[in-house]
Length: 421
Image (cartoon, rainbow, N blue to C red; front, side, top):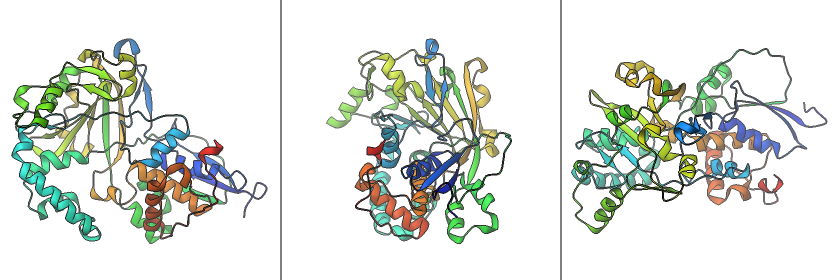
């Protein structure tokens, strides 16, 4: 029964991207809903977390330590950022994958590995076209199975494709708090998938089971530090001619010229080879990876303080993150090699696995936002088609049909949510 002068009292459980999106959509109808959001952590917004750092040492006073960036096609994610006064900052991503000549490649300049695997790269392009047309069948296969099915080499799989599947993390804090019972008309469960599944138990519908079982979690740890020697020992973060393939075409010459330029800061990144995102495979187990970020190169607050046209900070002032995946395989970790006096912080993460299903179900940040909006839509909120745009609206309608079995009905007279804020 509706309460609070005819309004529905809605409890949103979980203050991550899904919960915040759900609450934001419901809050646009103050005449219909009274919304309370519950979050166990000390902060809301899940992975959108920041920490304080020493500006005198590192050149900035804060650091985004939960997520580093996102694709421009994440229209709902960036729509929310803009709506609440946080303009996304564009960056031209420089990646560095692998260590040493035989396994290194980058998107900045030509490498020997890419030349050696050029035929398989072309083959992958053809395979992706087949997958596009046969999506209902091939699109549901795990990436590893697809690579084997089309007879790609292990080097191509382990050194080029699988490192690209590395994704950002979600934290799971825990705390003890006194509680009092409250009564609500509706419940939007926006907790992590494994927690939601446990809470629903035998009451979960087949559709809820299908969605929630698409996510598998592992325990990882992120170490934020300034140990440049450790970072350089496991990743290639400086240009070396030994890593560079021959500049045989004008475009390759331009790439080499750019990479070898004197490093200079610019608003959207760097001139010169200044990589930000790193992945390397373990020689003893090529299927397993270690991830890293040079946050000083990546995050805009550092570049803003450095200033356009200026050289980068000394390596010892850089802030790095090294991410050690899956504590069940900690025998591979080299976490003990990071100097204790260089460690800024450590965070454990209850992270979804890097599996095929996170592209299809609810295991991406953007899809989490959409899932929260979809829950609000099912409760009676309108979708902000004007605020998010046609591309986002099309994505939302497809998600709603897949996850909820409901067809989206555009409301031509719905108000623009953003205009009311």
